[in-house]
Each structure stands twice: as structure tokens, then as C-alpha cells.
Amino acid sequence: MTEEKRVIRRKVLAKWLKESILRLGPTFIKIGQQFSTRVDILPQEYVDQLSELQDQVPPFPSETAVSIIEEELGASVNKIFDRFDFEPIAAASLGQVHRACLNGKEVVIKVQRPGLKELFDIDLKNLRVIAEYLQKVDPKSDGAKRDWVAIYDECASVLYQEIDYTKEAFNAEKFSENFKNMDYVKVPEILWEYTTPQVLTMEYVPGIKINRIKQLDKLGVDRKRLGRYAVESYLEQILSHGFFHADPISLQHPGNIAVDDVNGGRLIFYDFGMMGSISPNIREGLLEAFYGVYEKDPDKVLQSMIQMGVLVPTGDMTAVRRTAQFFLDSFEERLAAQRKEREMATEELGFKKQLTKEEKFEKKKQRLAAIGEDLLSIAADQPFRFPATFTFVVRAFSVLDGIGKGLDPRFDITEIAKPYAMELLRFNEAGVEVIVKANLRVLSALGFILPQDARKRWERQSRAFYNLFRQPDRVEKLAQIIERLEQGDLKLRVRTLESERAFQRVAAAQKTIGYGVAAGSLVNLATVLYLNSIRLPATIAYSLCAFFGLQVLVGLLKVKKLDQQERLITGTA
Image (tube, rainbow, N blue to C red):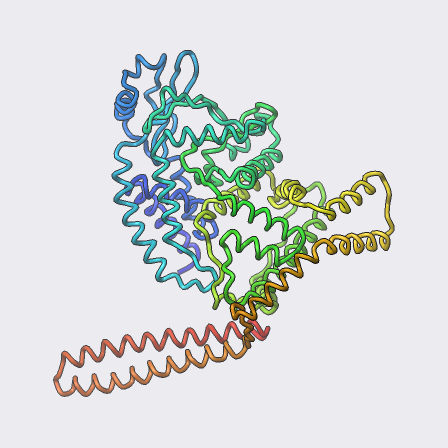
């Protein structure tokens, strides 16, 4: 099969999948919308088809929508509204939107699809079974222990909240309050008198979807600034308020963010049914993680991860710390390389040279050779977790990165987030260190150029002065460690990773040999029974032989995988 035939086959299967999801109904349409953003998981053909679920959800009959509105609001639409458009202006997985005029003001009415609660009860019950199955079969070979059931529970909870439009209205007002001092964000006003659990009436705020590049250019807004606004708005939501827009948006169809020309370009947020919240300890942990990366302090980064529940303080923490240090150093090198590229960049846009397959493999081999043993140790101990809260956060930022690159080819989410993070870090800094750093900044601002040696001596003195105030904490921490050693709560362990890998390989090989001996014995037994016309026991013996033969194949693959890991670590692959 050629690559062209594979592409054609994927397109056919992707179209079938999209049509099947549409037949399955709202629950699965929501799931399809979420996967339409995951270009890192699905081939492009599937992403293209699933992205159509964002805008191409078929509407339900307008007569049904009108009957729901009249039942919920207790009057005829002709009596309530000055004008009501029976043709919906948009249809989504959970409802559709009609435009109207109310007391001389343009509004939109969001009407929920009938029977959603009953559909959710059935579909989500089945999906929980799948989550429980994934919980059991997930090999977690990457060192992360994912809680699939918790992720399901988080998604199910958010979905149930989304079918209560009064909660969406409260969310919209809370979101608007959080951004009341920022003129680049607009939230439609809620009309509470005409809002119920199944009908939501709000101000009509037209805008151009953030991915319509040509229309944005005609509007005369700064696309580069819009990309920065999108990232800053999410940083503000997550780090400052712990309350963020969690509804899936995709690069192809980001229906929940639009733009108008007010204040030189303003972001309009729609649809507040799916909102995520982050607990104070996770927000503080994120800030501490920012601070740890800023200081290149792996201990501070690991402590923040423990605080957020991402890392469990068990297993070989030394290996985790060394891995964190490696990635911090790599991150610093990457930033330095990006700065160098920007300095050398010309006005003409250019693209990086794509690495060949051999070059990519060589880079991967170098990385694994540097931290291979630590990664294997982490994979065995599985100290990492994936909190369900992060499901929507990670998705939101991955999508924002794609939207930003569509608006501006030079878009760099890290560069946009850096000033915001630095501002937060300045609020976190305390004590004498901030005074010393402030003095250095003041001297630089006044035009005093300190010699390099004088600057280094100043920084050494400032560190020594700062450490003077940290010594009591360090002495107390040392005393606590000694106390734990005396009580037996803390035990020293010496690991020989080479021996552990050798024992793993020997154990796998022994198990494979045992299965092979069993399979051979069963073949002989089954053959003897078959030749003596004892058919049923012979069939059972042949079946068992096939099972043990499969286990032999699995064992051989495991031994081969261990050998490959060993060669990658030692750099001999």
C-alpha cells in the first residue's frame, strides 16, 4: 500500500467517523470536538473532518425551539420579542442560537436541544466503563500515572453543568467581572428576566472569528496584538483568578472567540457553559513553578509540582531532580538559541530547515544518552500524575498556540507569556534580594554601566547577604532530616541502575523460556492425544499451546525493547 492510498483510506475512515459521531448525538459530538484540536494524536485527515463538528452540527427544527422558549418563558415569542428570527444563526452540539429584538435592543436567544439530560445519563454511563478499562490497561510506560476515571469525572461534571443555562449565565457575569478593567475583552450582557435552565438570552455582540485572517485585515486590527491578547487573557484567567474558559476551540473553527474593531481590536468571548476552576494551591504551585524556572532551581520546580499534585514524593527523587535540571538547562539553551535567531532574522520571513529522519534520530539518541538512566528509573517508579484539572488547561494553551501562529507567523507563546510571568514573579519576590536586584536595575536605568568584574562581585555579595537570612531555615531543615533519620522515617537507599536493568532482562528472558518450555510440552501432549483420537483434550492442549506461544512472542519483544533501551542509553544504538 502506497502513501497515497493510505491518505485516501484515512480520508474515507475520517468521513465515516464524523458522520457516525453526528448520528450518535450531542455527547459524542462534544468528544469529537475535543479531539479535533489534538493534532498531536490524530492524523491530519481526521482532524480536518472532526473540525467540521465545530460549525456543521445540524440544527433541530425551529418549531421545537419556539415551543421550548414559550414553555420556559411562559408567553408567546411574538408577545415577548419585538422581532424573532425563526432561522437559527448558529447550531452547536448542545443547542442553537436565534436572533431577536427585545425592547429595541438586539439580542440572541440560546435554546437547548430537547432531551439532553437523558442522553447524557446513557452515554456518559457507557463512557465511564471505557475510562475504567483504560485505567486498567494503560501501560504508563512514560512514567506518568494517569487517572482516567478522574479525568472522566471532571469532563462529565463540566458537561452536566453545561446543560444548565443559569449556571452559564452566572459564569458569564463572573468572567465579565474578572475582566472589567481590561478594555480588550468583551463579554455579552446577560438578560436574567429572560433566562432559564434551557433558554439563555443575552446581548447581541457581533464579531469576526479570530481565524478569519482576510476579514481581520479588512477590519484594520493588529493581528500580532490579537495573538498576544489571547494568550494574556488565558494567563489572567488561570493564574490570577483560577477561573477559565474551558470550552474546546480549534484552529480551524475557534467559534467561541471573535474580534471587533472597538479599542483597536477587542476579543469577544462566547459560550460560558464549560468553565474550569483551579484551586488556590494549584495556582500557587503554578506561580512557584514559574519562579523555579526563572531561577533555574530544580528543587523549587519539584516542590511546586508536589504542591500541585503532579509529582508524588516517592521513588528515586534524585533521578527526578537530575532530569528536571537537564530540562531546565535545555530550556535555557533553547531560549538563548531563539534570541540569537531573532537577532539574525531579516524582514523577510524564513522557515527553519527541516531535520532529516537520521538527524532526528541522532538528536533523540543524544538526549536519551544524557538522561536515559534517570528516565528509566522514573518510568519504573511512576512518580508523576496527571490531575484531571489540567485536562482543559493543556488543551486551551495548545490551541492558543495554533491560533497565534495563524495570526502571526512569528508568534512565540513563551515570549508573550514571559513579561506576564515576570510581573507575577516580581510580586513573589521578597526580602533583601529584591532590594539588591532593584538597586541594580536602578543603576542600569540611570545609565551607570558597571564593569563586568564589579557586577559579578556585587552579585556574589548580594547572594551572600541574602543567604545570611536563609541560614536559620536551612539549619531547621537539616535538623528535621536528622530527626527523621533517627526515627526511621527516612531511609537511605543505594540504587545500581545497570544491575536493575540486567535483572529485568534476566527475569524477562527466564519467563520467556518458561513459556517456551510449556508451549513445547503442550504441543507434544496435544499431538499424542490427537493421534490417539482423544480430540477434546487435544483441542484444549493446542489452545493452551497457542496462548503460551503468544506469551513467548510478547516476552521476546520485551527483551528486544530492553536491549534497545540499553543501546540508546549507552549511545551504541
